[in-house]
Image 1 (cartoon, helix red, strand yellow):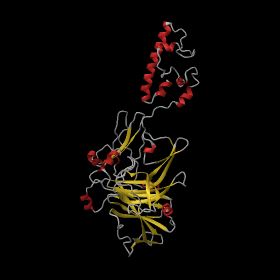
Image 2: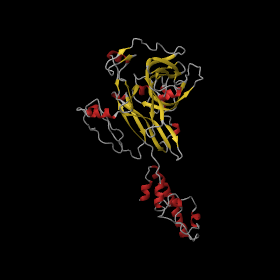
Image 3: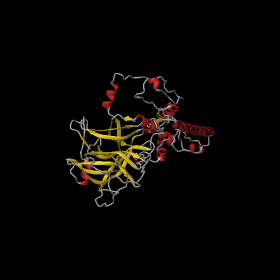
Image 4: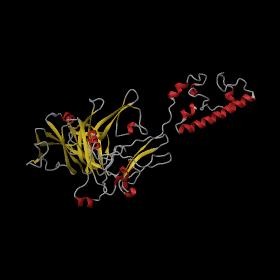
Length: 460
């Protein structure tokens, strides 16, 4: 421990170091490092402690062959050298992976942070979260997360198989517990996901009292250098831009594009009486004030890419650092996606031959046209038609499958195919022709519906 008396400009080491000489004696740990200290009112309430006089500290690590975890301590706010061990905060086994949305929680944790975020719509609703670096992830989890590239190509020669994750959980007291693997309070996993999909790791956070926002930054590792070269240069990586994290809330969510909301474990979905859901998840974005300052520097200029716009049959738009004449840049782009587009994304290539790259791909499934509004619009134009066909201007393309003879003998005098003389050959042939036309229109409409142009065809 070290103390500062000039707002952090200089520090003096505490003479009584170390405050905690070692890990808990009754546990075999995989790691015990990276202390984090802060107030935690919800944890104080769960343990029945005074939140004004109690701080909480956590030390990251894991219990060998049992679970990754973080070890929880209660700290006297008036004397931060007094730490009382409470127990492991989580215990859900090795390599827990709720789904492809949430990542692999690994075997050992590093740089774990705890924080409480308020709902951005209803501040009375709060969620407790952990932000942690996860070690010992299974390589197969990377392939199952949607990355079609081989595992060794996606992680690179110098990126360990690990993740930068977060989780939201519920605090549960367990006063009767006597096992060393579980403490007086534990956090149950509710939902969680990736804080970063790239090379950011060891994220750390603090609460900014001036802006009342939680700020997080991390370590950007150097993946293009092997261990020998990194050790030779004596340093590795740099700090990321600070990011603001918040609890994002979306109301009146009907559904997801492809998956069921209940299957997406990176969000919390609460159903309501209106048949929709309120969805919450962790949101992260660069601190806007920092971005504004970087953009206002004299050396910053706006550069346009020399490559032409994508054409109908073109698939790739590429540019290099020579096009923008800098190695430090910010990409500001927008996409106009057609109805026939199935996938769109960005690939950042870090080495020649595309050996090292970072990809961000999104699928854009085509939606079927909705005719609800058209049905209301055209209903009065053809009151003589069956309600199933009133949404069309002309002959209905979805006529029921009937024999021409049955179409002739319909009792409704206003039906377009009504024939009061069923034995008249001319009218029978006309009904047969109309039936053939209906089948053609039906087949044509099915083809057009697949491309989302049914409304346009009907208007013509």
